[in-house]
Each structure stands twice: as C-alpha cells, then as structure tokens.
Length: 114
Length: 110
Image 1 (cartoon, each protein chain N blue to C red):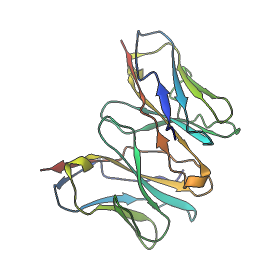
Image 2 (image 1 turned 90 degrees about the vertical axis):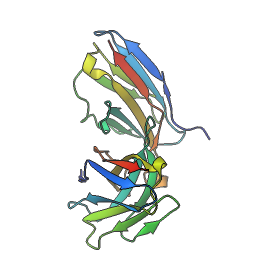
Image 3 (image 1 turned 135 degrees about the vertical axis):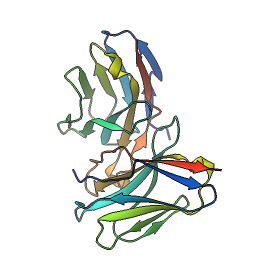
Image 4 (image 1 turned 120 degrees about the vertical axis):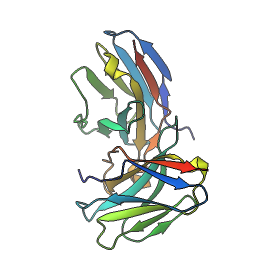
C-alpha cells in the first residue's frame, strides 16, 4: 500500500512569507508526528497527534508554527512569517498502535527561506 | 519522557562488527527499545525493537542489558551502505509517543 507522502518536496520562499506543508499519513494510522531536521543534525520533535486527542505541541519552537490534523487523515504544518533559521527538512511520520509503534516516515519537505 | 543517551559519532571499518551503545537509565517497565537509522538524504527507517530479550533480524541484533538500562545495536558486518545516523528511542507499548534525539552518526571506512 501507499506510504506516507508529503508535499511539496521542495519549497523556496522569501523571509516573512507564510508556508504550508502537507502530510498524508498511511491510512488507518492513528498517530502522526512532525519533525524538523536542520542540515547535518538529528531530528527535532515538533508536534504529535494521536487520534482525536488534543495534540502535543510541546516541540513547536515558536508561535509562528502551528499544525492541524483532521481526524486521522491529512495534516498541515504552517509556518508564519518565515525566518532564515526555519530552513530545514520537515519530516512527517505516522504510526499505528498495532505495529509496536513503528513510525513510517515520509520523504520530507525541504524548506529554504531566502 | 524517558530519555536515551548515545555517542554523537562512531567509526567502523568495512566488514567488521559495529556495536552502537545506548543508555536509558530511566526506562520504565512498559518501554520498548526501538532503533531506527537514517541514510543520507532519506527519512529514518525502522531497524529493530525489543523489550527484555535480545532480538535478531536480517538487519541487526539488539542486545539488552539485564537491568534494561542500556542496550547495544550490533551490525555484524558493516558495509558502506550502513553509514547512517542511528537513533535509539524508547516507546511504551500502549501509546505512540516516541521522540527522536540526535542519534549516533556511524561512518564506515573502506
């Protein structure tokens, strides 16, 4: 079946603009994660959705970052008034309780803020 | 969240075994130990997981200390393709809340 997909694969934007990144999880997966990965660094947790529960937003670096998820489907990560330090690869993962929590990752969106 | 500690980097020679350590002294009784790896320019991929007993699969082996406060991922014969960042993560069996840290960057020398 289809894996996790993300769009766009690449996004170049100007400082101060808003961007929206999309993640389509694997169908039936209740959990969805967003991570940020700067060049040469490890994954930085941003936000976690689990079913219809309130999301865990503890990793969002500032109030310019927000994310939504409708039920157990698509999620969007929005970055307002982008800054150059927001440049990174944004990775989405989904998982299901039935699979020992194995996270399946999408290919990521590479964001470049000029 | 239960945290893990890994060395920032390790080096290995091709065709030799590699032992990647992970400390998780605050692990709880329900936490599984998961390992993922991230090849260059790719998203992380699952490697192996375990609870108490040592585990083997086609990719690697996982050795878990008797007190579960540490574990070791074993690559029996490193290849150049095994060069990646390896992440050790704890996750409870009844929820999906797993967080990735910085991992260990493994360099394999020919």
